[in-house]
Amino acid sequence: MQIIFNFTSNKDFIVHQLDKETLAVLEQEFNNLHQNNLEKKTPKQYPFSPNFISSYKGYELGMSLKQIERLHNFRANKKWINSAQDFQMVTGVSDALLTSISPYFKFPKWATQSQKKNKGTSKKQSKLDLNLATSEQLQKVYGVGPTLSKRILLYRKKFKGGFNDMAELKAIYGLSEEVINNIRATFKIEYPRSIQRINLNTANQEDLVKIPFIGYELAYNIVEKRMLKEGFNAIKELTKLKDFPVDKIDIISLYLYIN
Image (tube, rainbow, N blue to C red; front, side, top):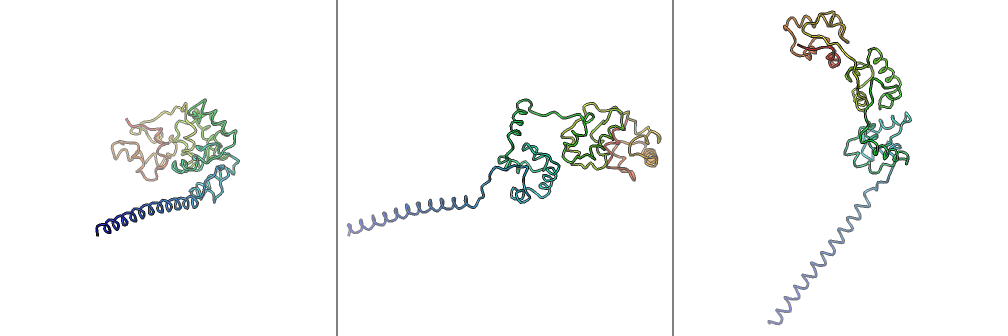
């Protein structure tokens, strides 16, 4: 009986061990097959030129319709994207999406050589002076064409010394907030023109009408409101007046101060 007991126990142990080892091997094989299947299903990404992204390709990459349209409009003007930074500035893609697709960008040799040269000579490109900008330089900004560049130059010419502040771009018809931000990214005002500011709490109607976007009726309302309030505490209080051009408050503020 002892002999039979020992034989039976060892047999069960051996079978149990074999089953565990077999299961481990089968599990490893299953994992390998599963991984291979996933790799086959995942489409491989190959290098491509960001200058020739079709609507379908852009959709596959995760771009929105608006971002694809921006790219196509940019290329329609015979302009080229020569870096990942250019691609983001033109399309407006997020940092996360740019990080995931930019490693596959393929640029011409002359573009990559130019990038290396620029990196070696200057870490950060300095901004141009808006008061010295030419029509050609303005048109390099995304969203600025011949018509808008002409309007910018005509507005600058109206004032001796040019622009005083970037806020004045809001006075130019056709410049959206997005385009203004693009201009800010490329240009600065090195030497702003001088503006003689007037005290909002002492200025008369004749002084106020000399300020852009303030007519006689609005100037009268300002003086009348000032008398009722016994003076303004902040320039932004003007925005509460009837028919006040709220979107131009940043420009009007350039001509005023409160003592």
